[in-house]
Length: 85
Image (cartoon, rainbow, N blue to C red; front, side, top):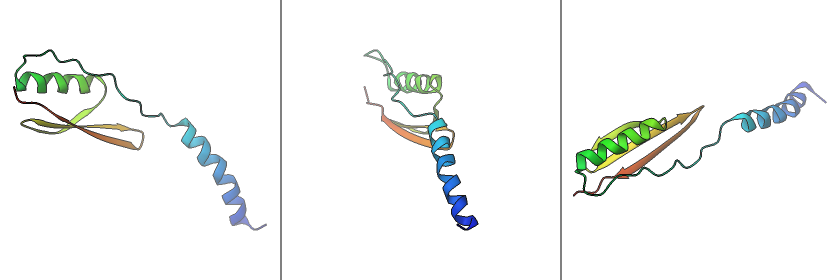
């Protein structure tokens, strides 16, 4: 068996161990926002809620927000529509 085959044989278990050690993404708990708040108050509550869970608001427009979560080479972006009151 040549050296490149040995590299492949040793690389497969190493990759499996690295994938098993990576943290998995889970759905965050819902963010509660009381009814009757202004659009600004709802956007502030969403911003605070995602920040407490390690997310970063990456885009914010009136009525729309995107937040990004970056965990060890995994990147997830979610969007939220902020309903007008």
